[in-house]
Image 1 (tube, rainbow, N blue to C red):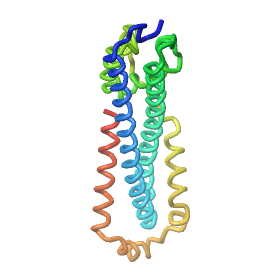
Image 2 (image 1 turned 45 degrees about the horizontal axis):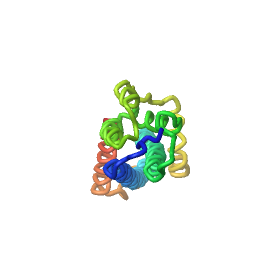
Image 3 (image 1 turned 180 degrees about the vertical axis):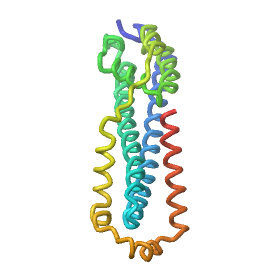
Image 4 (image 1 turned 90 degrees about the vertical axis):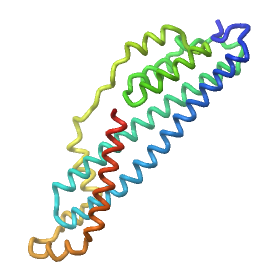
Length: 217
């Protein structure tokens, strides 16, 4: 059975196009978030180098943890975008072909993508709204709505976080941290870093932490 039926209306086709537009909007929003996080990551790297020059090893690790978290967030965003793209292609194919007999509940890949997005705390709300539009267009049925209602949050994986922190610190500092100044010369070299610059870096870090917390909520 074609998911739009033999006599699908123009309204259904328009609803399907609207679904695709909303998915495109979501993907562009993800791109903007990724670019913002990458810009902030560059500032954190700069802060790590400054901390390494001042022989502040603990500060380096704390800052490196921010990068670990941001990279995890970016990786999850790329996964989300890939799943959204998969759903968008499926919707476009269904809307364009009258003879399609494949339904979304029988499509393992699309079902997997929908379930993945619904289970993500970051995208659960938007996917619930999007699913309503998809049901209006006849793209998904009640079975998917039940899956949405029973969705559970995805688990976090922090097993290797310390190893990642050490890896990032080594990547960014290496020589500066290894050849950190002695206590006698540390005070003189620390004068090279202005208070204004340190305050600017701290503000950037606060902004980055706020963005990461927003993504988790």
